[in-house]
Length: 295
Image (spheres, rainbow, N blue to C red):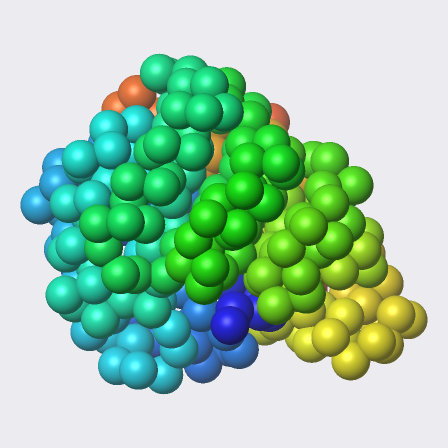
């Protein structure tokens, strides 16, 4: 259902407000450079500092600007089950292809709590769900047995996972427990090559915000079984993958975009701030290494 390079889009701000013109340009640029789907309002989109009205406007804009050219996986996650349902209801109404649902953060639910949370959403709205496991941020680990049980209880409702656990063995766990049609996408750019080798089909990416064509070409090489080309492209992108996290994300990503395009501002919302000098240096060097800026 989903595969390839899928950017978790930044949300551009200017003077404290959503920059709709810049966001529309970002959507077009991503599609023109081979991104296979788009994720608005994920972690990289600073969804935690968006009001519900802003959150919904970003999703609406993304779907409107994409105009059916690629599917939209709307970020609908929340640590409040009812708020996640609100986001999903709006996203389905707007025409989203699926919802990306992060494991609830801060509350730290048990595995049974996760089953209840995701099960409630699956029972109350008919929108395909892509699970998102990022225990480094949520302090809640969505275990493979829980993912497998959700797929068993709700056939066809849970269509994939963005896995940022860093545990590559889970690709095999999910594949053997659910089947090859379950779309497994890496949530860690730097692990995308071994993730795909284990059975993954793509990456929901931070780096693709800045280097959409390189990321799309890398994923295409993986899908074609061209390991030599995939390695070469991975080497070209590798420093950039790490530079994206040299400071609190998406600070380095927004700085990189502001270096590549003059129509996007290097602006974040508190408590996030623009990345510091060491991160900017790492980003600059990585952009040069990737061939995105002149030496």
